[in-house]
Length: 249
Image (cartoon, rainbow, N blue to C red; front, side, top):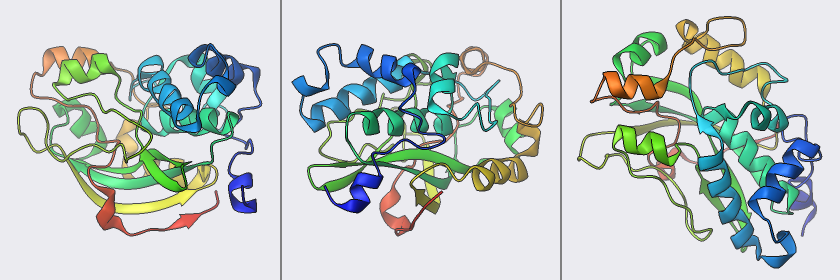
């Protein structure tokens, strides 16, 4: 593995996979141990552990520096795209798979009315996914919406086979317009905290209930109350038109 890739398996402030909490999460996801699996098999198993083991929730999320550490997110057990992408990037690094964190802007055509009001429209800034290096190539991985939430919002759960990109499509299962990619913000070795959290706060001030905590609520309850709603547009509909930009956080 080259020097650049070696750097991308190291722990960081936010991808703190040296933490016993992260180590336990990975051990649970890989009960036979990482050596029993190939890199692709490890990446796939950890993808599903994050997708369905960390509950997706926009509301009540902690965006403090401590709250965005992978270990803290696992302990809380929930978060949105920013949080879940951090956990996945940290988890795969812990088993020797290079990873980065990626951010971009999307337009979500199917957000609930309350979330539209809090966000200030249907454009969502600084939404996140992960990039992992497998079998000599970089792949996009989006272990964000868990199966329960997808069922409630009538969105097909996003799968990952470790051989092709895992990205959401622009239409949902009913053929409704879902997500539209607008802008790639960058790809980073660690979370560029001030840029991301400051950018979310500037773009969506009403989403915050406190300095680092999002408003109270429940996406599950909103799904029951609004049958036309869909979750926030954290994953990217189609990254390929956004170009490429990589940086270090």
